[in-house]
Image (cartoon, rainbow, N blue to C red; front, side, top):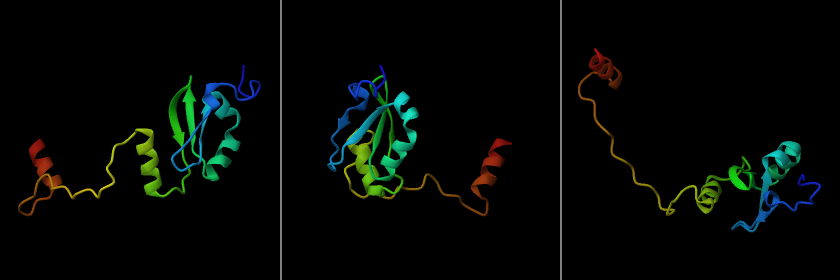
Length: 112
């Protein structure tokens, strides 16, 4: 039975509350294919859509205009990344090139 005939009774179309207060829409792949234009309009309006395959989340469609901070927060809340929010420290370079040769020259020389 399709989601339209079941009046959104399937678990693929359930909504999940997001921390921002705007619910994520969960939609199965088959329904996404059938209602792609409508889903794109919803995403343009600021909604996030979670695409599921047999009830398991496989993709997330987020608005392109979201700020970097909002995207990072969304990924953190989804469990995709772990970040304390602190500024990252600058890393040390792996090595320094001495003399007039470039890194490319050294690699070519090492291959010969």
